[in-house]
Amino acid sequence: CFSPPVNKTYAPLADEKPPLLVKAHGGPTSSTSTVWRLDIQFWTSRGFAVLDVEYRGSAGFGREYRQRMSTRHGWGVMDVDDVCHGALAQVEAGRVDGNRLCIDGGSAGGYTTLAALTQKQVFKAGCSKYGIGDITMLARDTHKFESRYPDFLIGPWPEAEALYKQRSPVNNLEGLSCPVLLLHGENDKVVPPNQAEAMFLALKGKGIPTAYVLFPGEGHGWRKADTIKKALRSELYFFSKVFGFPYTEEGADPQQPEVDIVGL
Image (cartoon, rainbow, N blue to C red; front, side, top):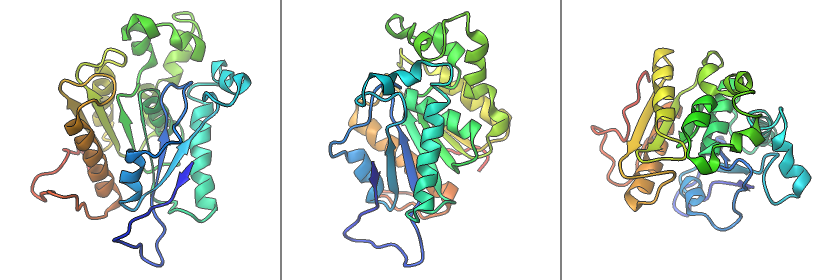
């Protein structure tokens, strides 16, 4: 689903195309929502176009479509290809600025975000929200209910450990050169915060611009209004620094950044 930027108060420059934010939904075998969403309105009202991708393996399009995710070329391959192709299709259609493509996602969508950034040279920045950087760590640390989910998505653990390592973004940083923002809940039991911590340290070690925000009292996803607001402002601030546009949110203090970005 493509949503163009809309704002009653502001208009774009005549010769300028908008940046594009691609959103990768979680699951990964869930789906995006077609209802009116405030998070998408946040971005479109601030000049971003948004593309919400129903990549192969998403629910709601029949069993055969969803089960494409259960192959050795599923998670970390099909979803990555689809978000990248979706972004490039918008560039080819003349809808967005090809030099200002960014991506975000939460949980499994955070994994897709990191995998796309490390495997492809399409996006200029990304934000992983409570996402997965190391699938082997996930197989060991996640809660019991989802502990065998990666067996369906990649292969049986630990027999397929080599493939788990191959698909883990933290092991593929040689393909990454763009800035990455990491947002995570301190009490997350589904994707523990050691995922974001490990990714943050690895990115810093490689000299890749990055920032990490840990939200106290939050689990897997945001529940508190203050956290939702802070997460959105942090992401917008991060992209403003990457793409070089003014950050003008209400109450913004030029002397007090929303996030501390290392290496940018």
